[in-house]
Amino acid sequence: MSKKFFIIFQSKEVRRLLENFFSLSILKLVNAILPFVTLPYLIKVLGFEHYGAIVLALSLITYFQAVTDYGFNLSATREIAKHRHSNNQLSYIYSKTILSKIILLIISLLFIFLLIFSIPQFRDDLLIYSLMCLMLIGQTLFPEWFFRGVEQMRYITILDLIVKVGFTLGVFFLIKKSEDYWLYPLLYGVGFLITSIIAHIFIFKKYQINLIFVSLKKISRNLKKNLSLFINQFMPNFYNNTTTFLIGMLLGNNAAGVFGAIRQIINILSVFNAVVSMVFFPYLVRKKEKFYLFSKFYLIGFFVLTIFIVLIHPLIFKWVGVVNEGSSLIFTILSFGVFFIAVYSLYSTNYLIPRGYDKIVMKNTFLISIFGLITSYPLINFFGAIGGAINIAIAQFLMGISSLFYYLKINKK
Image (cartoon, rainbow, N blue to C red; front, side, top):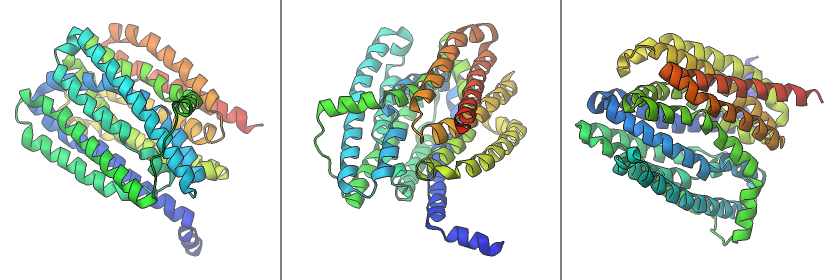
């Protein structure tokens, strides 16, 4: 048995998967845990009112982050995974992707400032929303899709760690009173920008990538080709992000702050799911026959992890400072939803999409997201923040179950 395991771990494919898993795990966990480490401090210094203003601004920016992503974290990754040994192809994919994202970014920024100046509640926090745009710019330009495609994440992990530790230290040393809450999006945005710039410099030097001219016609064709993946990535905002957004608009910044803090804690589960899904996506594009074994172990492991987090969450709440009535129920409901998002990621992202069933995934995501959008207002209006959690969990449950249904249906053919 030990000899068998030794042979398995000698495999170049397995070593690469393990390396990417740990590298991407560090990258994603740093992005999730360091803000989580600052959460108790921010709540204590800023209070839920000012923290809620940050959460509301993040909710608005998240819509446009989905626009600038445009599904490239799947489509561009898929292309690069197929052509990673051709420098000319890599340069072309890199150029058309980054130029497409810049065009979408410019359009998004115009819409954001139009909304800010049109809505009084946003206009009152003009500085916060403007600084959040730095984060959008940094996230848009960050070439995660490239590193995922070539299955090499270790190079940027250390650089990202340095930047994020700097951000965390900045929070503790610079934010001293509630009026300093504008420094949070500034530090966050600058951190993303620095990481993005360094990552691109590394790509040019390490992979000899050349930025080549791509016509608007080809960019338009690229956007049209990826429309189904964009809809698939964007639509969950209608039930997911809109819920947080509506809680802030209907119940106030304080309620948004509490709900945002709970979701920040839940994000630990989401990050773990994202890491596994991202690491295995390019591998399962090339090794489709390995899906069954991967799915069996992953579902069992994620279920156990979810139960564990639910059991220990009172300790986390005590540490963070979340003591509001109904918070534990909200956490449990949201945990239930995250498990089914893991089911969705497994069967949609890692099974259907690698096999070219983008439109089935899009249709599934579109219909459920519209349902979640319709039910968000009445549930929040009648049940408050608990209704918001129920709305998210129901939509995520339907996403997971429907993706499992399509998997079973297609797998029988």
